[in-house]
Image 1 (cartoon, rainbow, N blue to C red):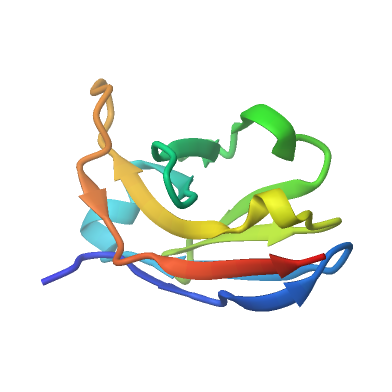
Image 2 (image 1 turned 180 degrees about the vertical axis):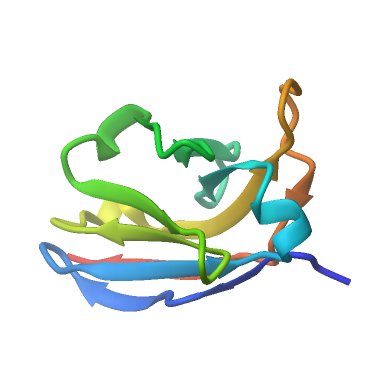
Length: 118
C-alpha cells in the first residue's frame, strides 16, 4: 500500500502553471519533512523542494523562483505550485516524507506525470 497519494499532474504548455497535491496519513505528516522529487526520462531522481514541519522551505536547482511548496497541516496535504513551466520540467513528480533526524526519504507516493510542451 502506497502511503502517500499525489494528484494534479497533466499536460501544460510552456509558461503555464500546475499545482500538485499530496496527502499523507496524519501519523506520517505530523512528524515528517515533506518533499517533492522528480525523475525525467533517462535521468536520476532529484529533489526539487522540501518543507519542514515548522514551514521552512528549501528549493533545489532550476525551480527556485518558479515553484512554491507549502503544507496544510489541517488537511495533511503538501502542495507544489509550479509556475513558468519549461519543457525541461517534464518528469514524473513524486511526493516523499522524511522522518526527523534521518537523511533518507522513507515514504513515497506512486508519482504523477507532468508534461510541458514547447
